[in-house]
Length: 525
Image (cartoon, rainbow, N blue to C red; front, side, top):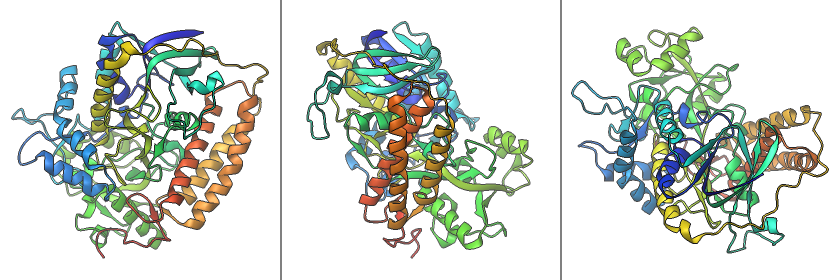
């Protein structure tokens, strides 16, 4: 089956939805979702979105906080663009109907999170992402120019490679013509031709055994661009959220929002002793890379499997009012956060690197854009500042939409593209080959490419994952496609990128901390 659209959007989080709404007045849009349209990482974003709203805050303070968190690797021009455009983009959300919490005086009720010097986090209780997701989806599904395809999995981008033309990473004019997409309901593979394509496929948290990311976060967009010979950058910088709920039987890990620490929660050892003063003058509100390493270090010293987040000293009514979801979830496993400390442990949370894009969301492949967690704009540098992610998606989806809409009339479909060839493929009757390989990969990445790394660990990870790559590619080439084998293939591609770019970075910087390049865990020498 073959279809044609002006705009193909892969992913239905804040990046994909806001872009679709911006380009819809200019042409026909197809929005592809690998699962139900509301099942995205955006939906699980608890904390909120950072932007400057009131004095004494200002753009320069937010810029400085972002640069400091990024540990010297942020693109300062991109940071300035993002922050100075932030207020207008948040107003877009408000105009679409997103309901951010307000105080009794009618002003927006702003939170403060780690690394921020001012209160600037807009939120909807502790369900900000869900509020944004539901509001934007309602707008998208009612738009006559947008077709939403749920349970459709993007397999690969279409480039001139599929015309038999050699393409490599030095090819200067690689062009994207759309994507091959698997309809999961009937196993048909569609050829979707598009004048422009936006990847908004989210991160790759499931390359690790413990992650706060939803199960759909398997690095699909990253892997597709890598296979299409596009540029991927900064993959060594995987952010581990310091405070996921310690509950080993739960997957994905439940997030205890950074806003809880911003509200006054204090990190303590299992003996009830505070420890962040040993690592950073900002204590529990230090940037995430520092807090995660501090917790990891304390756990290694003590041999404990978790530390505590103590909220018992906070106003109980206010605590429940601001964090009703966290309160209810913890209560469901017997933890009353009003009188019990919360057991927490770091978990893989955010992919700071990704598909390298410019200030208009343009990738190294012509007519291919990327926005959100799958992209690498230069905003985050070596470590993402809390609540800058939703903001980044809004800003660069807006910029990409303007760029794509302006040139759509000058782009033609590539009609010569062949349909997907599944001749000779057979059903894989041994799912154990896929499930066990996934467990092996996650174990390798967790044990060797986690919060603290070394050259020896990284080399071992490379050697082990190379065998998984060869086995999986061989299986992929002879199998009738399924989501599971495609996701495994993508995660292996992503693991390779993380490992290799970590090996190439011969220093400890931000989220990449290596025992071979000594550096203090925090900012206290």
